[in-house]
Length: 484
Image (cartoon, rainbow, N blue to C red; front, side, top):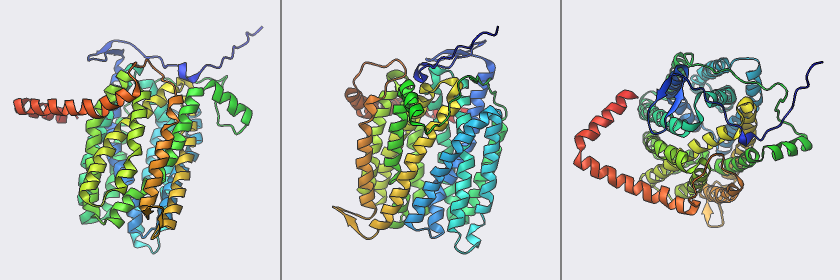
């Protein structure tokens, strides 16, 4: 008689991926054991990510300026960004389901190749009359194929990178990717001013294809599928309620990120519109300001990564959420380039931490054997929130154009609304539980330490050290550049 298979539903936030430990010992403060394939794959991931960051940085930064160049209206800007979010939403379920039929590396390769091929006709749009809706449709497909790989990539990286050093590793990886983005931003801004949009988009396509060389060298760990429990997105109320109870922390995190995405996207696409149309700063200054933001993110990644490993990702996430709430308020009060630079520095510092800890928290709150499905569902709900925010923002931007609301006029009213909604979203965060051992320091005390005390002390210490040892500092910078 065949034995009955025991079916057990386990809380997703209590499941931790197993860490392969073999012959190679990685030295440092956060030392772990890992095999040679894992170590090399982590390095190849940084190389691939560096090229892909350069490629995607060009496209993501200049999509809205290109739309403005094609004479897009405020409402069309909102629709453009909303359809990108819709593409991300509908790509998640097929992206997750593909992991049951294809290897995760194959999904990534298909995603990258398809994305770059759809960018080729975009290069020719300036030669056609009234091309804005063709551009919007093509961007929809590029966003769909670009995000198709996300569940597979998140699952694969969650299996490759040991749990104990995720904060440190992704902090380092994001810093290096930031350097790549910074260089690309400065160079592409110059190329744009001389040769136009088609030239920088062509460079993006080439960089994306070159990144494939490094990705195919990565090791894909065996994917542990759970065939007696298939997690899917269900519209059945009873099933949804059961899932929320069993996976409470994941559900609360998803609810927060969904509402937060709505609050953020009400205004975020229109920061670019505000700079280029209302303040008329030009493409050169736009590229410089964007590069400053990237530079701040580079220097902030390691800082937030170490804080996340020390105090826990939940507390750092709360602190960064409070900081990013004030970004639209900063734009609302900006009237020249100097103001914009200050806002971009603040924004880069806050977003560096938020992006890092929310990604690490997502990996920690999802079970390894069902991570593609969980990540897909997470991206669907957060994508819906973002899409609704973008459509709402586009509609309000069109309505408020040339008019006001209360004490605010035009895009300023939209920025004020986003500020209020972001503050409200922070109220949802205390219900989310920490997934790892958490430091006992209260959030309000930690906020002052990590936002003011530690950065100021660290800056003063580095300045003193540079004055006393300029040669050592320059040699250290040179070694880091060579290593990258």
